[in-house]
Length: 466
Ligand SMILES: [Zn+2]
Image (cartoon, rainbow, N blue to C red; front, side, top):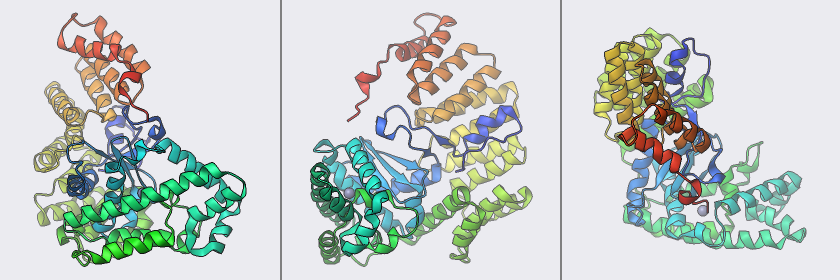
């Protein structure tokens, strides 16, 4: 379940539990400094869907075994970018795209950058951020007007013109280099799309949208557009390649489109509020996505009993949908029925084909809320299970620490806290808690050794900030 961060929870013991419902968390340790302050959002359903979009593309790009993580960024603007072995994608991009194919096209293009090793060459993502900052500054100084005057040259063209006029040739060369990279990534993207029998029309649609002057209107400028210069000839080349493909008219499978619609509705309900959600839902009358959005909106903004009835109806339609069960669990938690919630989350875990680490942690939170010693022990098992699947779910360590604490296992709680800090990239506190945990452990026992690993860790050895 996905939600905005909230802090107005009555029961202190459940603060973390509720926050974990798709909380916005800091990006974890292995992400470069560039991305350290990116507001990451976690959601089992959306992560699974985007991974399903990416999997065949990564395979075609020869990246299947590279363990590339997909990270969802809580941002309404359109953006997707690569840093290290992570592909970041904004919720705004997922919301804007009307079909899976549009997102798959963007992923294919980004995969082209990864496979091409682009970031290891002239500029890395830090460089790109710098470039973006420069262009953003220039935009503020009237480059939008220049962009309108040069018409099809686009935003980057405008920024370039101003930059060159100011004698800043360095930026000009970065942009020129970037342009070559973009053309290469486009060509690679088409190769991957062809190899997977998918159309390039979605990618073309996205890039066309950025190319039109329309996307310059209003206060928001999409970062993707700024980092992706789209001069006329690039789009023209891409258009030729897309239309040559035997798969140009291929559309997404209906089941995938349905999941996409459900994702968009979910983002709208949780991120953009009731009014925005209603607008989107009205565009999908009679659909399962509309029904899903309605149930979620009722859960967040309406009556709990009604939300539960609507969710039960959804489950009748798709009894094997793990995320309907997850929603049912969330509703039952809000209704203060942790036992029933635990059953719903247990079902969600057993039905989840993607084996998300988030769902066992939700199950664990429900078990914690039951509050008996047996349920706390079961909670520890489930949360550990979730963290085993997804080590970087830093919120999970907080619940684990709390569960150990309530069971009276203080060194366990301190080790969990240490690991939580560790995976949040907060090494100083991680070491403090690891040392505290060790004081109450037998030297050399497995948990003592885990604490020792944290104490011995030196960030510069393992984190590659390129
Ligand atoms: Zn690109």
